[in-house]
Structure formats: structure tokens, C-alpha cells
Image (tube, rainbow, N blue to C red; front, side):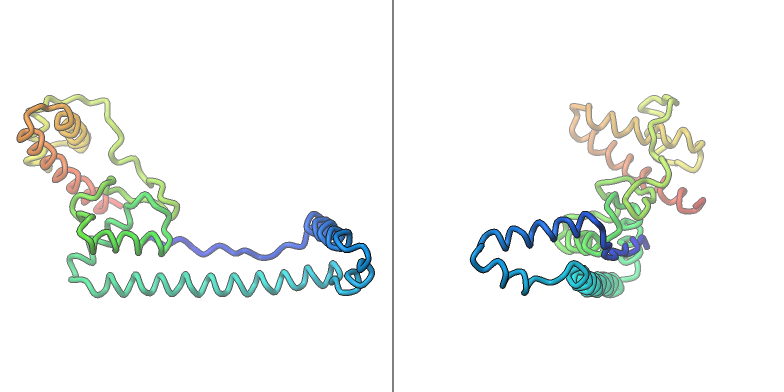
Length: 210
């Protein structure tokens, strides 16, 4: 299942940060000139402030990592609570989703599914795997140069295993294009169903050869 590693956000002590601190402290003194000496005594040194910020950064990162890990565990518990077939379908959809592989995104996918807004058999994106950033690992559905007639495209969709992979790709695109242009609504729906079924089969083939 896709997983994006948690980045490290180590605090860096830089000359620019120290210069910004000096300007900030100077503004604080200038705002109350009569108390400038007292304010200066209470202001931390640059080393003290940089050390404080480093500790604060580490604390915030630890809290963020803990929250992120808790979100991953929640998402996995939700998936594990589903029937085996649905859980497998959710994992497959997630592995093909064009979103960063963050727990909040996975929880969003699960929420959409729970509301009936996500069809696991026909998600709104190609069923070809993506990396942790959501970029396609392979251009499975790139539009091929091969042309097939709509009648042949329907034949291919009915029995895809009998045709070369390039023709299956071409058939998928042709059915999609025909459905979007066909004024016969019933025929357009039928072509979309054929395209969707072929779409799923292409995804299965990709997984089998991954």
C-alpha cells in the first residue's frame, strides 16, 4: 500500500535567522525607549533563542509525527474492518490514486467510499500505479497511435484477452471518445461500461506484470 515517508524538519541555525532576531529585538527596544535598557536585559541572547527554537522544533515535529502515525493506524483499522474483497479494492484504488500518499488523503478516500461517492470498480482516475507523490509510475493509458474502428473496439472490450495489448489500449480510448460524442444516450452508456470493464482488465494486466 502506498506510503509517503515522513520528512525530517530539523531546525537550522542560520545567519539570516540571527539577523532577523536582532532586528526584532531592536524593534522591541525602540518601541519603548524609556525602558530599552530593561527590555535588553530580559531579551535572550542569540544562542539562547536559537537553542529554544531548536527544542521547540523538535517537540513540534515529534507531535506531528505522532499525529501522522495515529492517522495511518486509523486508516488501516478502517480498511481491515471491511470485507476482504472491499479491503483489497480500496488498497488497489489507493495504490493508483493521483494524490500524495499521506494518511489524510487515504482517510479522505475512505470517507468518500463510506458516503457512496467512490465506485471502487470505476474510480475517477486510471487504475495504474502511482508513486508516493501521486505521479504515474507507468503511462499505461497513454493514447496510442494505433487506430481501431468503434465496432472493433467493442469486440476487443468483449474479449480483451484475444487481442494484443496495443489494440486493447486503443479500444479503451476509442470507446471513451465515442461515448463522449455519441448523441444516442443508451449507446453512449453501453460504450462507457465497456470502456470501464476494459479499463479494469488493463489494470489487472499491469499488476500481473508489475
